[in-house]
Image 1 (cartoon, one colour):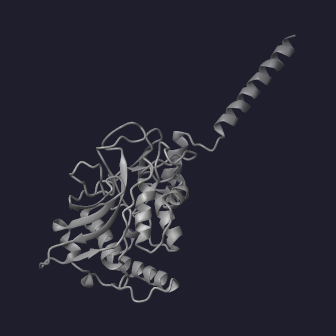
Image 2: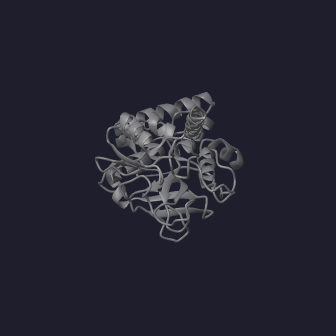
Length: 312
């Protein structure tokens, strides 16, 4: 009898362990496993709060929202796999010097135009910072977002129109993985990937900047030199996010399309202090122009003071 009881106890323990293993082996990581992996690819990472999805850095760099492995990416986050692939560095194009950014993106645009039979469009021809214009606007179409969580697909649709590419918003939303009415929007890398997929280029990438000059360099490279709009991301204090919180957790996507700076003795590359910018807003259903109120991080760029919920 005692032997039978011992056998039953052992079987119970074994079955419980097997059950626990099955529950744990669902593709998701524990908090301890996640931080260990992140720090192995980037020693500068200080912590990862797996509940809020926030990654912090030892050197005080701006925290980043990263979707836990095995979960669906949220609006304004990058996926776990993309973050690992980039080794925790989301500076993107800013890893290159300014002059190199301009030359490389001009080359990409030229190849796109040659491949598509576009002759002498005038875009993508500026390869020197000294030749950048004081003002430049890109012709794109404003598309209102067709669903509450489709500001990303709508902004993508607007940017693609500047390349002469027409895709439906629902088609783009499918590509970016955001069903209509879901409680999440497109992730950063999903938008960049969709833009590159439809243009057949490597022009776009998740690029976080860390000071005003770096942000202005992105603006001058994409619009001033290459003549291409891009998708901008920012927080808003007018809308609730998927966690039912307000400022500063909600993000909204718009499509910057142009800039204006005074014609004076200040080189355009350093003229961000007086700049005005133009962008299309999927939410406001308008072509908006705002004064530059630049903050040093990617999700806090230009704030629209008109109360329509838009931020670049």
